[in-house]
Image (cartoon, rainbow, N blue to C red; front, side, top):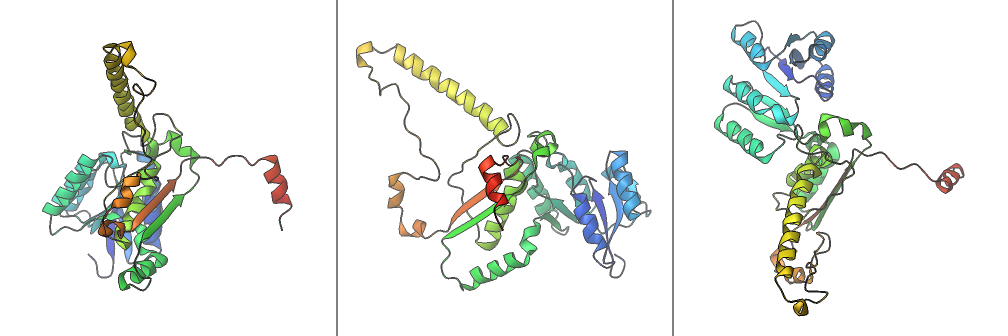
Length: 307
């Protein structure tokens, strides 16, 4: 590393790369983008023109240039879709190149565990996931107040991320094969990270999802699995009912057991031990990738009458 200058490679020249490029420009020369990697020529050339960085079509080509002494890179910022990161991270860690990886780390749990294992084995190579909200001044203040006990015993953590991104319905962000999810993985992961950062480790006891896009985002695999389970359950119920005498069936005997929503726990939950009752509860809401409804006539009229 040149004195006072940290040279980085941007891997993945999509939208989020602009945030890192902007940060490097605002660093007063402390961070410099010297390489950009993207298989799409137009994308990598755009970043190269903007930053003066060397452009490569693959990570291996960029690492080869480093090994040959043609390029000096101190760290890599990985901005690719989560589904293609395993080989990229593996190559960087093998080359002893520190990495900062955009969140979420992976699109499926198996890949996330593999990435964590890779990072653990490369003990001398820094590897981080970029959860930027940890560095927000209000978040730092909240963590300090919670840690010092200034606000007393914490019993509830509530966080919401919301924005209007209707165009994501056709982008890779909501493609389960590339992103693994949608609003929850993309932005809800920030909420989960903030809970861990401010409150501490937690165990998930329940969740509730609402979806609007068919076969997109988190519901794609879940709905297919739920449909299979439902079909199997109906088949079992039908088989059981057909094998029983008609006189033994009542309106209730063939009905399903009532289900309990995660935000309305069963009465038995009130019998939890005191230690469980004192555990902070989390309410994490992530609303995104939807268009706001058009205002009604009355709402338009009301808004015109406001000061």
